[in-house]
Length: 123
Image 1 (cartoon, rainbow, N blue to C red):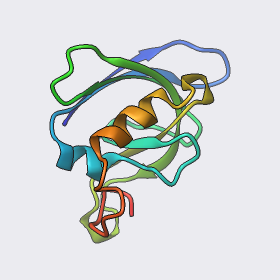
Image 2: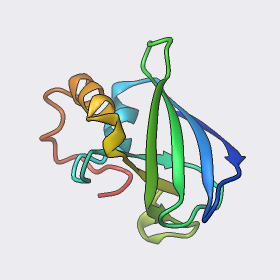
Image 3: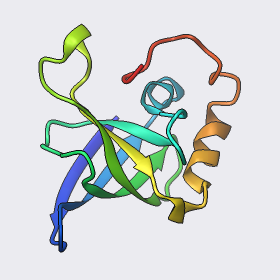
């Protein structure tokens, strides 16, 4: 998994562009947040984000060459030193503007694994 961030000016808060590449099914399972309305992803990053920050995510899944553009917002923050040695990062909830496209694509990759009891980055 790789993530990179750039900032963009916006009125009334932070808006950032975040590129995130997930190369394998295990990493996708660990990052996917299916219990959030519209779905979401946990993105390991040491950059400072606040709850509610708007994110424009450029998501690259597996061997796909095209990135999926997804608008979202920060709904989860795991800070440095979090209990249980959790990965530092943020959870980004997908916007309704996406109409479920990113969530459906992720769920297709994870078919059969979503009912697993394996721990993830968030739960």
